[in-house]
View (cartoon, rainbow, N blue to C red):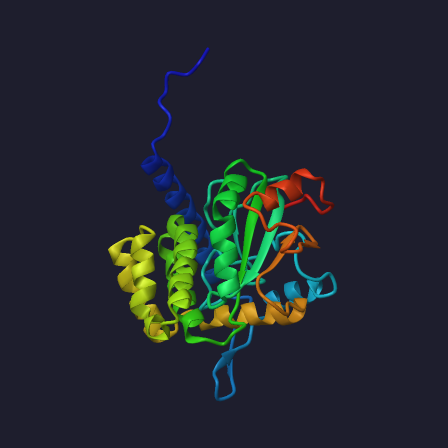
Length: 282
């Protein structure tokens, strides 16, 4: 017999996702208090953080396989890394769009990118609707691998802001990711480097629906470079996996030619065409 229970509203689904992410974050904090497996120290005048042993072991174990593959199951540990980030620096989204979750049996779409890369911004704009659809129907897990390949301040600004969103309002993380790249695309098209500011980042966050309270925390995190350890972890992963350019896109462990998927349904068509790859997700 059909249920008479009404379907949850969008607001109710968002609140449930937030509660789930909050519970995950609290559990992670308890785990960190019980056993600080990894610590990072600052080296050199640039103050570059070195990833801890546990994270390094995960990265090193994958360096011979190249980019892509299965989702790293271990979480990163220590200060300066968002609670839901994996030990290779990645952010994983499953069907409910909550960072740190994945859909069993889905293909893993890995995107290695830089928030300062206009090619990455163009890729995001071109495939955003398609990726959202593939996520929602459980076809893929989205595995984002951000890094500062271009060594720009904008990547620092967005990375610190994203760290706050992941820790404080994870249900808004994917929307903010898309908005930050869209904002960069606008600035790049206008050739207005003066707009690459913290104010532009927080404007993108507001447009993505991030709460005012979290936007205010972004400003502090940006000023303090709170998530620098995350940036160092990302850089280590790119080096270990030999990522030479962005965007680099993989379906499971198979690197995709951007030309082959250069239509608005290119990723979907590639998946439906029976592309080989590892279909497991952790």
